[in-house]
Image (tube, rainbow, N blue to C red; front, top):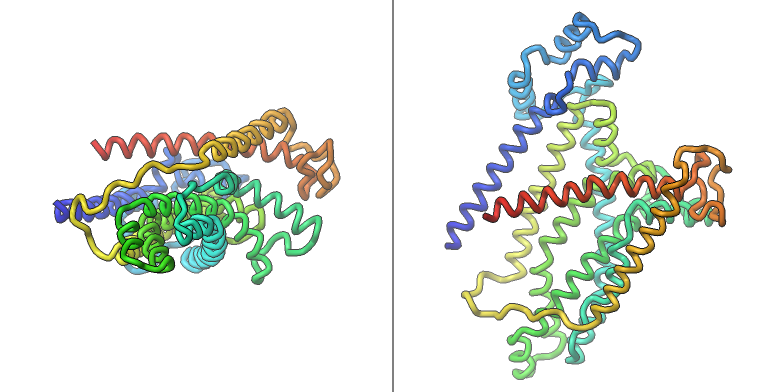
Length: 408
């Protein structure tokens, strides 16, 4: 049974990898628009898309053969380590995309450090209750509040308060450690709240397992019991840590935009906006490779933490979490109420009108202040929230449907 599961898992990874390569190779044709027309518009906006001009662009870019020859040439260059040339700047893509990946990886590692510190702070009360042999209480409302913070909203608040008003740190750029702090906090605080909640709930479940009482009856020290509980709990959430890492690596585009960081998310957004599809292909491929690497590392870490498979029925399922669920529900309700208040008050405002003073401080008229162009930040946050939540709900719904179909 275990061998069949491992074989199915390996086959699914192979199929997923081949499907990703097929999609990446056909990316210039998936938009249902002529790639030559997109390039002609990006390079020479004043030229008419005549058949002669489009044919010239196709010949220059090697698109005259259609989707399959184009994809085959791209795959062949990929096997040689050649990521191609930009359709817009005609420069090699490799140096730019690797530099963007390095920036995003550095930012992600700093954010993971912040997240682990916050997760450790959230799990500390549960660890102390294990040392004192007291019942667990769940993750509590603090983790819920931190998890519910949107990264772009936290980034905007830190930018306005810490960088603009207090002038403690640089407001933008990527020139040293001081420019990493604010974006790392923007990404790491919500991620730390999520990891802290997961780890605290896992610790609470593990602490109720029978082997913990056996160790106590055998006279094991509290520190030894705590180490065993944390190791088993960490094995349960290590996969979520990998997902958080990948989410931060590729989903930091909002924070990178706020702080003008030349990372991979901003690189992909710029490539999509300019229809530079070879750059988009390279970025997607590197993201997939990074996700695969993180998945392998988390699988190895999970096996090391678990210490090998256990026979069926050796451990009972963890009981349901007890404790302050009411406080967590109240916190989630307050966060949802705050979001609705932002939408109700911000959507009627004009997010594009430049009628205020640049970087105006928050006031009754401007609850969130104004940005560098004099636009109402509350209006921009509210309208941006709608633009963010709509595709998010669609993606989550699609992921649920795909997961249910694969589980059948």
